[in-house]
Every structure is written in C-alpha cells, then in structure tokens.
Image (cartoon, rainbow over all chains, first blue to last red; front, top):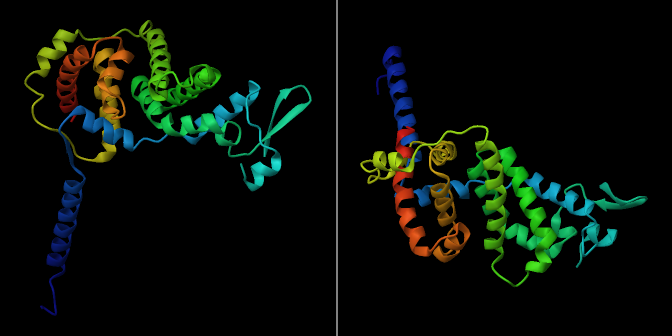
Length: 81
Length: 190
C-alpha cells in the first residue's frame, strides 16, 4: 500500500464507491410485478388504517347510546372480561 | 380519560386511547379483522387519505348500527365491502357531477394492447402507492373496482361477482381487460 496516496485519486475513488453503493441500493429496491393484483397486494400490505378511525368510531357509537357491553371502570383500568 | 355525554347529566368515561373492544368487544373483532381492507378500498377508490378515513368511519358506523340484524347471514367482509362500495360510489358520483373527465373504454383498451405483456416495474417501493393511485384514477370505475376486489385473496370470484352485480364469468372477462389497461397505464407513469 502506497504510504503517500494522491488526495485527488483518493477523492475520486471514494466518489466512485459512493455512486456504486447508491446504484446497488437502487437495484435492490427495484421491484417487478407479474400482475396488477400483485402490485395492489403489496401496496395494501404497506397501508394501515389510521388509529384515529377507531377513536372516532368509539365516540360516534357512544354518542348514539352504544356499548351493549359496558365495562365497569375498574375492569377497563385493570383488565378482565 | 375523556368523557362522552349520552344523556343530560349522564357521563360515560372513555379511555383516551378510545378502544372499540372496551365498549363493543364483539363488533371490535369484526373491525380488527376488516378495517384494513376496507380502508384500503376507500383509499384507492377515493384517492385521498382524509376522505378514506371519513369513509371508513362511516362504513363501520353503518355496519355497527345494523350488525345484529346481519349476524349469521353472510360473510362479514362481503357485507362490509358492499357498504363501502355504495358509500364511495355515492361520493364519487357527486364529484363526477362537478368534474367530468373520462376516457372511452375502447380507446383505453386499444392503446393498452401492446403494452401489457411485460412485468410492471417500479424503481422504489415508496413510489408504489402514488403510482398505483394515479394508474387506478385513469381506469374506468368498473375495472378499478374489480381489480381492487380481486386483489383481496379472501374474496372468491363469486363474491366479487355478487359485489359488482354480474356473473363470475363476466368478472373474469373484465378482469383480463382491467389487467391489461392497468399495466399499460402503469408503465406510462415512469
């Protein structure tokens, strides 16, 4: 190994390494799908229901006089069926 | 802990996290098993996360109001899909009345013929959702719906046929055309 490396060559080599890494990362993230359904299924698997939907639903049900199985406060806090 | 007043002077305490299983454990199981697919359907039919959130809430609220009448008669998922499809269709109809822009099916299909054989490819997964939404927006409503329903592996062709008001054979035929159109439009959005 050269004890006195050329700084310009070092920078060039480092730049090439970075570019190669970026290309490799891009390659690994590329995906192909054989059908529309396959793409949709992956898309669906990456989609989650916002937690706010459940919170709003709870409020709406309670406003309509819902809850056919009201738990006493101590069961809600400490668990139990 | 927040409180909701159902009747004058009567307050019901609700945990801040607002969990459905605390107030309706039976219905909570239905929600947990189906909310994701219903939200996804609403999201891709409506194209907007906020509207999809509203629609999902409305769908499950309607389902909750009638779930005791429904119990045991058919699959929950099919019934929830029915409510969601009707709800989103009503919303889209009101939008279309204000913003009409559609391409004839025949034109789309002719353009799609030569583009549909090779695999669909995306560079990064993070662009998948946006690209799928734009692709679906370019399809006729019927094809969009069929693709979204068939993508749910828990639905049979017969169930998809029932939900779309046609025979299973007709679903298969339209699915073939829908796939080709989707592939062609998807590739245009590079």
